[in-house]
Image (tube, rainbow, N blue to C red; front, side, top):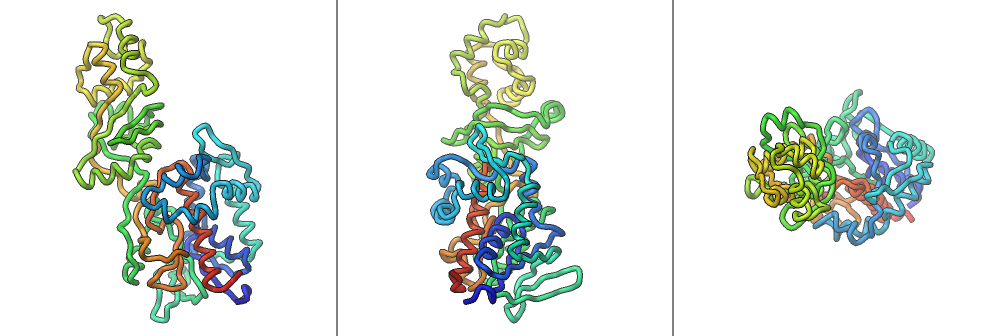
Length: 406
């Protein structure tokens, strides 16, 4: 088929949709991107507030393991568009990158707006058309894509479609998950959407909630089950959030769903053993208050001391060895996950059984799915954008193969 005669609709102007549009337009297809918001790339801009973590530099085997049960079927897409390709792509847009101390990859600008501007300019140069304020409603009786627009309802009949509508987190940025019911009615198996990379509720005392909400726990190690994660956590009025919590969020969510709560353990001084901590505490006069002994011996912050009281009771042990043991393992009970609209990303989505190896819907031939619409999840750290870019490119290649475009 002559590419000039191929019209492809990309529904959703996030990272996955824009990547699909780029691959298709570079192959010569006539691409139109539809988005329900007034402008595209809004979630990418939100990610830019944290520096725009594009991908991660760790070796590919542990990298893929971050995707859990989805690693096997995501691997071909990520192998075809690996982290190195993301870096080269960003540099091609004039955005040089660097690897942070944690192995995360960022643009040197540490924001998304320069990259997004360059990306949209490239897409427009390739002839990609953009249709903002077009809210996809499904298919009509003729199989055409239906949209609600400010001018009324319209229907379009492209040669192929890529759906990249995101999950259901941050709905004010465009991804509201409304597509799940549309696809369900069309016979597509959809795993229920759940929050991922979100905070959890803890029944804090009034003192801790009122005095310390918004303060971080830095350099801690958090253990749940057999998994131990180093990083930071943020105390909120509701409970805990932050990178170390997000890395455990899938397991914590499942445990709460099964048992009604989940208990994790926080090591406030993971670089020192209990014996060393006890020895340092023992050097402080027993006549001093517990808070002063811990502050002088181990530089515990007021938040950390109060966290110990939350975990071990108001009256902390005076014995240095017992105090050290408490510092090495402060238990906290999590009672619920924060709502999906407060999550960074979403778990669940279009089931693997509902698509073929090219990410085409079996129930809707010619319709492909990419990004967070698919049933996968990963922690923060560059893995979310990486899989969104890679599945967007993979869906686009699937379109080209189906239409016989080389």
